Each structure stands twice: as C-alpha cells, then as structure tokens.
Image (cartoon, rainbow, N blue to C red; front, side):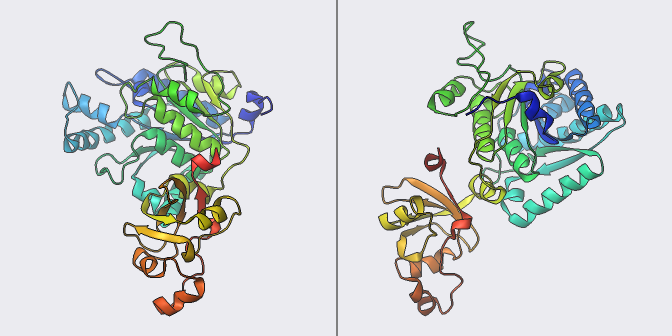
Length: 381
C-alpha cells in the first residue's frame, strides 16, 4: 500500500463519528466533567471548520451510579438497565450544558441492534441523524441499555460506532479510549510496550496484540476496537484509535499529527448495503450448500440457486439474513433470502423450473441474489 498522508486525508473528511468510551468519560465518582468539557470544545472547533461530528457516547451507567449513590455496578441485567435509565438523562444534560457554552445544541438518540437490522428503521435512523446535522445539531448516540437484551444488543459501543459510521456515510471513525492506541503488548504491565502507529493489515498478530489488552471500565476492550476498525477499513473508511484523555486530541488528529493507531481504508471496499448485510443485519438461520454451489459463489461470482442447497437450519422469513456453510460447516458467506425456511425446505436441491410446481408460485429463480450476498471475512482477507 502506498504511503498515506494523514494530513491530506484529514482535510478530505467532512463528516466524522467520534466514539468515546467509558474509560474516557468516567471516574470513580461518576462522569469526568473536565474531559467532557474538553471534548465538546474540540467538537465545536471542528464544526466551525465545516466538519460534521456525530458522537457515540458511553457513560449512562456510570452517571446512574453517581446519581443513585451506589459504590459498584449491580450484577443483574435489570439492575444495570435501571442504572442506565437513571444515568441517561444525566449524561445528555451534561452534554447539552457543555455544548451550550459554545452556542451549540445536542440531541440524544438511543438505538438497539433491532433498529439497524430492520432496513426501514435503519433508513429512518439515518434520516433522523442527517436531519439533525442539517440543523447544525450534534447527535449524541448510545445503545438503549434500558431495554436491550442479549438478542438485540450491540455488545459494545465500538461495534455501535462502526455501524453508525456506515449508517451516516461518515468518512472517518475516531475511537477514543484511555490509552494511546494499540500496543504490541499491555503497556500497563510492560514498560517495553511499543505503540503500533499504523496497521495496514489486521492479521493474527494484530488480533493477538489486541487480545492482551483488556477493557477497563467498558464492555469492549481493545479487541472490540480492532474488530470495529476491521469492519470500517473493509467499508473503505479509515479508523483512528487514540487517547481521549489527552487535551487537544481531536485537533491533533485533524491537523494530521501521527497520534494514536491509524487503520487506513481497504482498497477493495464494500458498498453500504453489502456492509449492512455483512455486519449489521443479524442472521436468522443457516443454509448448507454443496460443492458445486460453493464453487459458483466463491470462484464464479454467481447467485445461490435452490439446486445447490443441501440443508436448511433454523426458521426465518423472506428478506432475513442467513449464513451459508459448506459441507464441512465452514462459513462462506451471508446473504438475504428470497424464500422463507418452510419454502426452502420444500424446494432445496431442485432446479429453478420446479419452484412454481412445488410451491404454486415463484418469487425469484435465486434463493440469494449475488447483489444481496457477501463473502465472509475469511474469504475476503
């Protein structure tokens, strides 16, 4: 990959997602108001330069802890959700007051994965955020922890930050944490740890380094930040992991300084819809395909036909996302189906000319059209 001029790249960014983790925003007695004041000052500085900023912010649970006077997080899910309910209003109030000191306004948006999995709600969320930006209002987005359950949670705000970046066609994801970036080993326990300034390929070595640096106060840790960066670079969007506790960090990033760890965009980028299929829409079932269909998909760029299906696993509806497996159960791809699971159980293994005879109707020749299919990361990288 040719050398990248970070200053020139930053000059081309007109919309950015800034994800701020719990390790940056919180301290033992609640929210770190000084850090929030610094970040809002910098965000308003960027806005004056014509850069639209979308925030993905943690901190609701920490704010709830302080508000209710508890010394530690409860172990139960309902307790954590109750804390989020208590703290969410505090968090957005702090942001509103901080932005107001600069004559700016903020709006709170709470999302679950369901909101971004459903294509209509996905587009509605996008339209709301873009409308706020057009009104010069800064969106502050967080996972809706008060209602989230295992089936619909993002898992961490690193993942949410990546989804929002794709959702809004932002051209950069800045992931702010409480260390300087990705190190080759844990810098808290090893004085010889070195910052990795640029990652052009997210391979096993990089993933191994990330696994050795656990999370601090949040759910993600460094591994989830690398996963989010990988998804973004595949979309053709650069990512920077940097230290949000350092005053002026956003100004340094946008002035082109080599701070943090930089992940340049992948040359072969997925389009927005395929990225949504691959990383946002939750699969509802699985299809096992034969060797002929595997070759057609991987080598010839073809669609999936019913004749190539050997087994249908799970229950799903037309339009749902499913994972494609080969005969050895290796994941090959993910895609949107044109038939539900009951229909596929009836037409699996047959030629397209037999679909209407067996069902009494035919939606499409293809079970999954190539335009709605994405090869797994194992195939892409």
